Length: 126
View 1 (cartoon, rainbow, N blue to C red):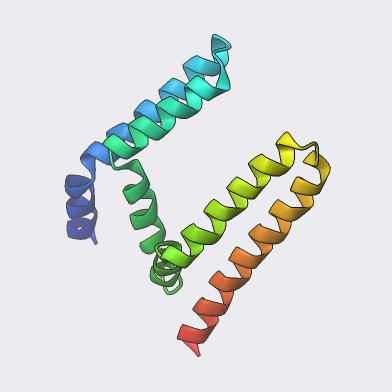
View 2: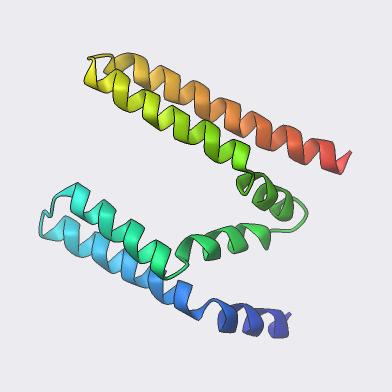
């Protein structure tokens, strides 16, 4: 177990540093009341450059039994496509004044994605 942890930290040391930098940027941004768009852009930039999102997916994959299945589902292009289309539709709907409907739509999309994930896991375990 210690060997696996050592190898994990050695492989993802940039990503761990990136998550620490993200936490610091968010905390400093909140304290100094920086615009949330700037904070979001910094988080995305640091996350992509530091491979922080890869570390998050690898951490999920370390969970016993269901972790690898969840990581596989989150890596499916279909899931990214559904979520991306959901965000685009949300942007258009908010611009047209349907902000209350967007909340129910996004909840339905999240329920669909969680259902697909649970179904995939149950299908692989059974």
